[in-house]
Image (tube, rainbow, N blue to C red; front, side, top):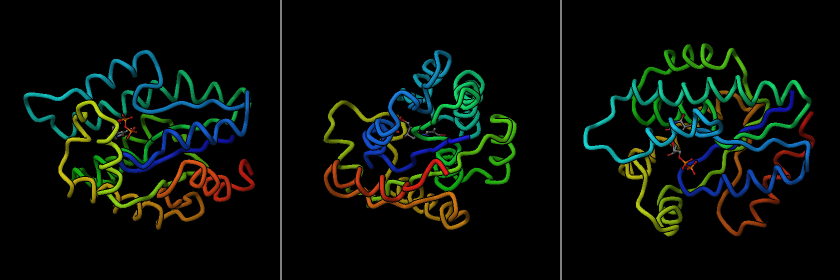
Length: 202
Ligand code: TYD
């Protein structure tokens, strides 16, 4: 069951690269994202990303991301995999581990349990980490204009913890992860992604 995910900090260019990668598989590819891959998820996404007058409790935040994910797995990911499609997802469980676990400080074991419950154990077989220094990513994200969403507006130290979290996750499961240098032009990075994923789906 070919299931690949893209992960990275804000401004890492993940979504552009996921699109380029999906194009390699033509009609066979399903490109989707979290949060917001389903109708229910788009509602959850708005709730999650809107700036708030009161702090959002980290557990509440994480459960909303997992609510989006549970719907996404059932409505889109599993049926597509069962139909033999190549599924490419822009963010998945590792975003929750990096952002809500490593950066917000929620218990990682608890998040793993919730992940198993929410996804029924569906795991990607390839994860591409688009990696770049936080300052560069944030500058890129901000140059897109518009006001930053609730997560983007977090302090630099938060984003540094996200990046370090991704590296820790990659080190724990090197068979699944590929770290790709996300600095440089779109074509250059797309070539690195293609090389890093060579042979996939295995
Ligand atoms: P999005 O606009 O999709 O950001 P990006 O283009 O960087 O992917 O917003 C998703 C935001 O939600 C992003 O800041 C990462 C965060 N997030 C979590 O904190 N936990 C999660 O489980 C997921 C899926 C996303």
